[in-house]
Image (cartoon, rainbow, N blue to C red; front, side, top):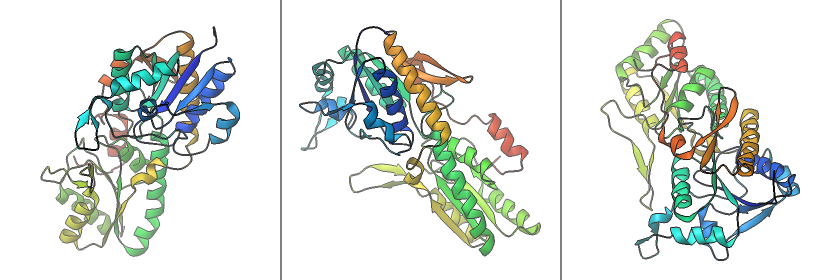
Length: 359
């Protein structure tokens, strides 16, 4: 694989299961070639610091992390370096500080693990500052259009499915409607995959409109058949029947999706009189041990990223397509947002199983 190289690796954006498995794979593949790997702490903030905040990564350090959740390097999903928030409330372009940090470390290349937003920022930095960038996709939302798998998605689906498995029993015991609100940003991939796997009766995703009356009709039909409970899974980005987006704002002014589960519960309870309960899964979907599939994809992505560096093939992202890893230009990869297509296989599967989707 050529001369000894020094490569950096960072995780950016929201955390998810499988990140440590990627880091481990990169270190294994690079170190056996005699390359040096520096883990950059807290995403681009680590390159912004002086001196840059890094950890030398060796096999003995990363080997125990295969099953660990989160990211050993830390991450951040706030603080756009091109409009970085300052203590006085102003914003400042600190991109040149990050670029200088990369060059100060004398890196030959940088592996960035992130979603479409993080990779877009990293690519802009790379284009501006001569950074040799290779991307690895991770997002529990699985909404990067050009890859069939992104790190973290399968684990999130497993966790949501397990939650539905558990809710079955308490729903049946109390003759309740149980609503599970899951993440997914603006795409319903987690909801529809977990909903089918977990035996949901109603799956609501932002890509398909619905009516409360039809949901209530589904509940009534089940009751008429002697089925005294109903399981509903809903993606956090689903709007109210009137088209309103429900969000919650914290004390810092940051707005996030939240509240659609309770909205549905109130509407259903008012119209049917059925006892209704809501479970918001939240960040549980991001944590814990990565699924075997996420670990396998992480290993394949990590090795493929190192191979791209060996080939000096930069400004590319590794992807999973047709049962193999291939590389595509980062710009092409992040240009295609992947929502759930109403004609997707899983949508047809849900309809074929008699699950109410809203249409």
